[in-house]
Length: 325
Image 1: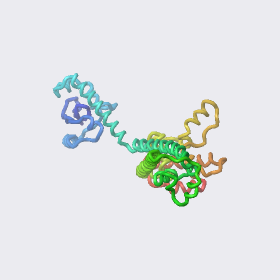
Image 2: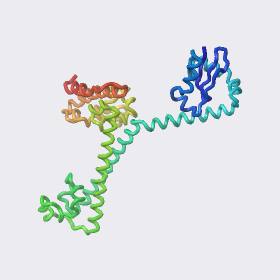
Image 3: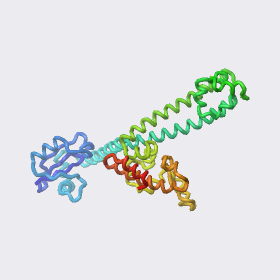
Image 4: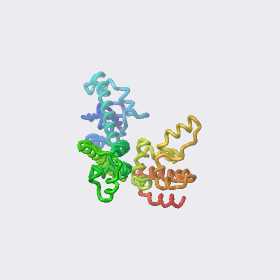
């Protein structure tokens, strides 16, 4: 019977009496320690026959005990000093930490979180600048300053004298002031910037929807991609969201109201991000709490199915939600 232990030095294989029988050195120890067996390791294990493989820190573990108790002897056989061993330990620990950080940063959850933040910040900037545009254009053509299509009108036509036929009468009788040509040029550029922000947000939202359909198809179908993404971002990851009780999911996004409830005894929040869901937002005010609880319960199921590799069950969850079950 042999005992193999995987260390920063490589895979060390000991006989039952503690003799070092085989050594498979690692060119990249951090990869071997965080991954599966290498081809060379498999060949050695097949040749030796009955071998128990373990990690150096596994307890109880015969291989680990033999390695720790005979460390100096093992280092001598490998031609390595204790100082070099400690340096290898430190370098490997740093490399493993970097590898795990890289994997975490490459995760869909992290990308989703960044896309959600980008979309919200773009919307905030767009609304702020659109408000400034309304106040600015009010000086020239107050009759259309509150129009929902103001940005498009300013970008396309600019001066009220150039407006389309449907706005011609309002333009001719407008109480607004004339603007100099240079002022109008800058104003149109300003409106073009707002329009570009809108297009950029649409592209961000499009990519967000793609990722959410891949990463959490049930949650996205049931909540809508944007709400689902905000829930994932608020929780920190899809897996963390899946481990939350429905009551916590219900109030994600309402942290300030929840704090006021806990600190000052204010009324507890009934919903957070899920308030934007049509079923909650469209429900009579007195029923929103009940609808939010029912929705949160189904979202909790959807998140768990997505996180732990289940099938597509969102249509059934939606049917039961609408049926009140």
